[in-house]
Length: 116
Image (cartoon, rainbow, N blue to C red):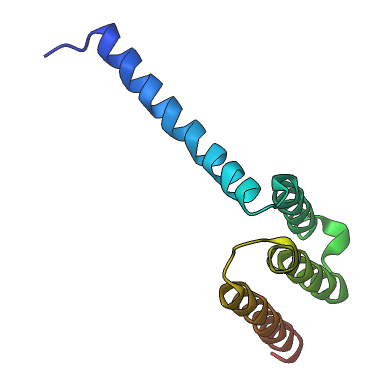
């Protein structure tokens, strides 16, 4: 059983269409709820940038580690608050639960990091 180029090219097109449709569907969903998709992209890039600072030798002290942990949690809290405040037609209870979860999770991580 040999694969012909036409079969392989068709499969590659289907895979490319699937991989492209995922970000586009997220983009359309954000626009449908009157949200700016660039906010989500910017917060992701900022989160990755702060997270990468953890591995630099200058930020290996306990105070820096704790500061970066809290900063990451605050960055992660921006998106649910943005959705809660600006989004239209999105379940309020779902977004409120995300905000409460982030606050509780941050408190837990800070207490665990400081006291244990």
